[in-house]
Image (cartoon, rainbow, N blue to C red; front, side, top):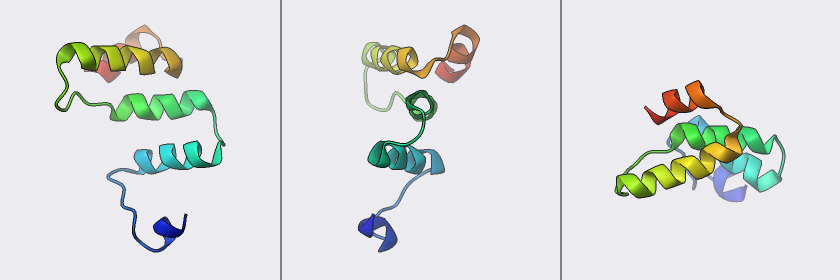
Length: 74
């Protein structure tokens, strides 16, 4: 918290900030944390196989189902 207040931490998006806050303080619905993680998940330098594995893992814990998952995957 001191790093954040001192301007030493920067976040690319508000979602990443909220995910870290929820993880740190243990508040909030775990599903919502996974939804935010799912929304910011990108392939980056991973192989497609590794990305799909990670996407499926997070998706299972997000509570999202079919159509929403397809939209997030796109």
